[in-house]
Length: 260
Image (cartoon, rainbow, N blue to C red; front, side):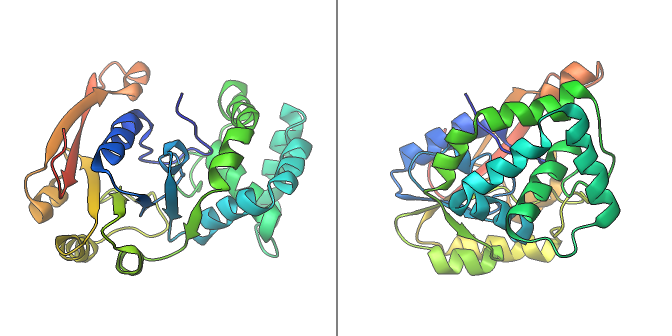
């Protein structure tokens, strides 16, 4: 069963089995999650994991889980004792903002926002439907032992992808890249065309191996990186919410070694 901590736009839950398989088949030692985001990929990789994201609040969340998990759980228990208490917390953070918060309180705030609001930074609409946010958070917390154990072994970095790749490139490294979706205002730091070309130039010379993915319909990656190494279809989970949604969505994979 795939484990997750938070919701996140572009989450790769459906393709994690293939990412995990390709990493194992690569024979590499270090799994470097360059755009770690929700951590959903890193949480489901066995081995030496480096989680990286340029968003310092996401990095703080995982660092707190790694070093102060009991404090995080105590705060979570306090605010999830009931549905009413849970949403009282949401109203309180809307009123006071995040000024002065740090460490555990900021980590729980990040956890709450990403699990109750639509959109990468939790800045669009929120939901109070019992069967969505509240029950989902309780389910996540029930699996917290697994999450804590996984994160406790991580190396956590908070770097721009250029700095990270230069620092960690070696013949034993496996770089997994799931860049921000081009043209989507879902992230704190959105990619420009120049970022993609910088990434292309960096990947040309890496000593390690890499796997990168995009939605197959995105044109900009195709223009910059050329023909994909592999295009694969996956069941579209959004299809159950819309009759007009296609049954499958297609993912383009790029790699500097043979994949299938």
